[in-house]
Image (cartoon, rainbow, N blue to C red; front, side, top):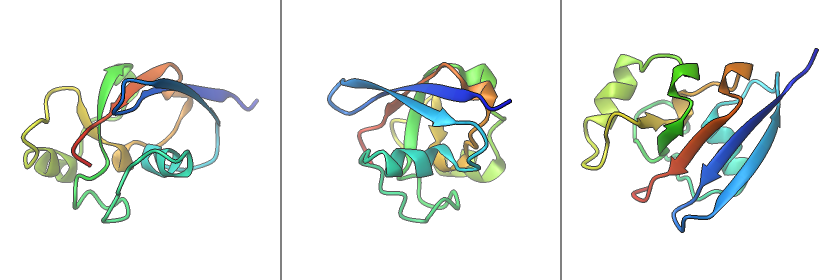
Amino acid sequence: MSQTIHIAIEDRHGEIRQLEIPDGINLSLMEVLKASEYDILATCGGMALCATCHIQVLEGMEGLDPHTDAELDMLDTLPDADDSSRLSCQIRLSPALDGLKIRVSGNN
């Protein structure tokens, strides 16, 4: 049975929008953000090489897979990265993300 994944996204201006994403589309969060017209550069195309898709997870971190070494290396280059920081290109959409709340970071 197909399920809808609900994600709340706060943009750089503090505006919050709800996205409803069908389960099973096999995309990264970065791809969905770009398709939804959020200002995400994603310069490297999702290879965890540029950190221009940096987000902060406000709620739902437990539903995410652990950081990869490549993701941690890139986050280490960001002056505003903290424990809630992730690269949206490294987050694959799955039902475990239902209810996720994120903030698109300001340095992209």
